[in-house]
Every structure is written in C-alpha cells, then in structure tokens.
Image 1: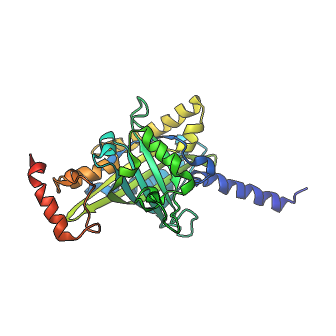
Image 2: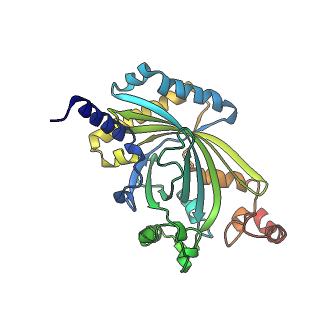
Amino acid sequence: MLCIPCLLLLIALNSIKHVHADEEDFSAAGYSKLRVEQEAKLLVPLERAEAVWKFLYGRYVMNVTALKELDLLFASYCNEEQFTDTYFDTPDLKLLSMESGVRHRRRINLTNPDDRKSGRELMQIKLNDLSQNVLERGEIKFEIKRPANKQSPEDNHPMLGMVKSSQREDFKQRLKEIGLEPFSMKPVLTVYDLRQRIYITRDRKPFLSISFDNASADIWWAKTRFVEIEPELNEIVFTESNQETKQYIETILHTITREIQQQFPFIEHNLTPKYNKSFYNLEAQLPFLRFLSDGICTPHKMFWPSCLSRCFSLWPAAIL
C-alpha cells in the first residue's frame, strides 16, 4: 500500500504532466502525422500593441474569476518565447501562392530557459485549404538532426540536410504530395517572432492558447514588423476529439476571439500567414524580390557587388 505522502506526490507529478502535455511535439507518433488546428489571426496596429497585451494578460491570466466564467475547469499560465522561422520555397514560390509554408523553427523559452523544449528545432509543413472552415490549417512535423559527416547531395541540401535521415523519405513524400520538388527548395526569408503566449488548460489538460506575436523580417535594407494575436486550439486535443468536443472547443475559441474584437474594434481579422505577410511587405520595398530565379539573394549568400548588379539587371522586368 502506498503511503499518503507518496500518493500525493504521484498525483502532483501527474498534474504537471497534464499541464505540459501540449508541449509533447517530439513523440515518435507525432512525426509525419497531419494535425488539424484552428486559429484566428488578428492584426494589431503597432502603436496599440502594448495596450492590447495588457488587456489579454489581465483578462485571461490575472482575472481568474473571469476566466472561470468561460469554464469552471479553466486555468492559465503565460510564457515568453523567441521563435526563429526560416521559410523554404520553390523557385516559382509555389508555397507562397498556396498560402502554405515549409519552415525550420528554433525556439527559446525566455521565461524558463531551462525548459526542456528551449533550444529545440523542428521542420514544419503548414497546409492551407484543408476544409471549408477558413480557420483550419494542417501541420506536419519532422525532427531536426544534422549529419555529422555530409556524404550525399541530400546531406548538403539547406533544407533536406537538416531533417533526421530516418524521416527524410516521409518528408520528401509529403512535399511531393502537394506538388513540390524537394531538391528545388531553398531558403527564402527568416521571420523572428517574439511570442507572449497564454496557455489555457481545462481540468489540467491542454485546451487552447492565445499567442501575442511581435514578428519581424528583413532582407538587405527592407524591413517589416507586425503584431498579431492568434487564439488557437490545441491541435493534438482537437484532432483526437469527438465531434461534440470539437464543437465545444470551437465555441470557446469564437467566444475569446469575439471578446478581443469587441474590446478593440480597430483590430483587423487577417488570416494571411506570417510567411506571406512578411514576403509581401518586403516585396513592396524590393520590387524585384520574386524575380530572382534561383531563390532569394541574401547578403550572406553572395558578394554584395555581384548580387546588386544582378538585381538591378532585373529591375525593368520587376516594374512592368
């Protein structure tokens, strides 16, 4: 028979496991598996960002009574994280046109640097147009493990070479299924995202999150920055739920989104992915951006004079 203190310890450990279950991206069953997520995207004017975050933190973290008015089993906590997302695409920018993406992600937990996921990397395929529900997107994840000795063209490829060798075939197959040639894909741009995320749990289990993203990107002299809120269902919980539970989760998501928009009517509902937002904002400053036939020319890839010469040679085509 377990002693009472031991039993209490087991219960506490189990509670911690439930609270952080939404962080379990790297289980073996999670790779090459399509997860369905629902997220709204609310674009916040830069000059109003501080006031909006203050409301979100007060409403969904500090005001426990108000949170439990949504659901008595709700609790919440908050983390600040830095994401570095490098997006890959084909020479004709097929993913950009699809409003989908393939990205290499690295995350740092600024609130808790000792968190086991801080510093972790993964490759993600983000898919649009999954259903008639415009909020639904698909996500497929793959592990990052660079080879110690690069022995093949795949090992040396800027995208494929990062993916764990045992998962590369699945990764390539997933790309081919959406009409992409994996070897043609190159890095296009990197988005830096300072994310303040509110995690809402239900009965100590993951339920949904509200991300407050301060995103930025730059190529040469062109720079862009934008702030958006992403109320998002936990994709693992949502994917594995029955229809009744899915409808309840969707109801809560819509309620939170509506609360935010009612509080701040100037916030714009904008479902454009970060990759597209960043590219279009940079392209407005670099009109020749998409005309570089073998991928985006960034300062670290080639010597400045030859790079600039090539870009200016394309200028007439860019302005037609």
